[in-house]
Length: 256
Image (cartoon, rainbow, N blue to C red; front, side, top):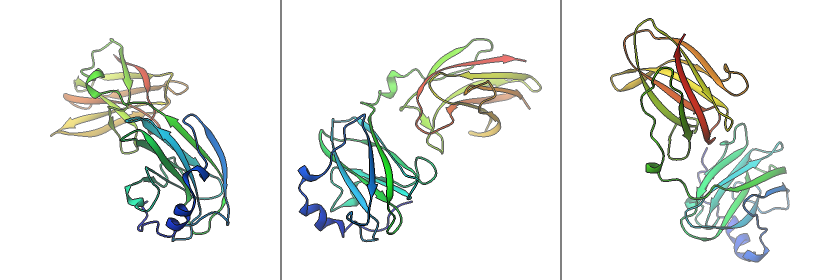
């Protein structure tokens, strides 16, 4: 969800408080905080705490705000006011009512994180986590997925340059030239993320889902047995169950 107004009521409060008075958070740090009725509020009367952090140019910062007491809302930017529209924001990106976003610093310097409640007057305890994911790997340095070869395991990696699913999970796509009636066993294994594999039929440039699997391979690995319905190209999508997970994997396709 998006806010539909600028954070005008916070401006006087922010202007009155020098940067040195604002608490700081370091990359790799977890802060346990609490919103109270005495904290500053935006025009919608939602309370917030403001944190500052030192960012490096072009680094990606992963920020997560979780609370069991209120609907969490995040804003990150060079300045939380007066133009809040320039901030990156998120409401429920971490699932449920928790917030999560990735922010890329355009230049080195001080940036601000606003730990906010989405609802009017909501208060309570929260956990704020800041992680530095470094400079993204250029897309052309990552091996591109290609064609599946039966019985030949493929070593791959999910990472930021990859395309994304609707839920924000990274995807690698492989093509398999299928024959009607054959049965394939597709295994996706990873020690780095909760593996998810699915198969879709390619038709007129679109991919129609055929079948998918999450944990059929035991633990967090995937194992999918699928019958190919017709001759033609099929896409094998390698992904993680959760958004933003990255890491190495092994994909194996055999007849079975």
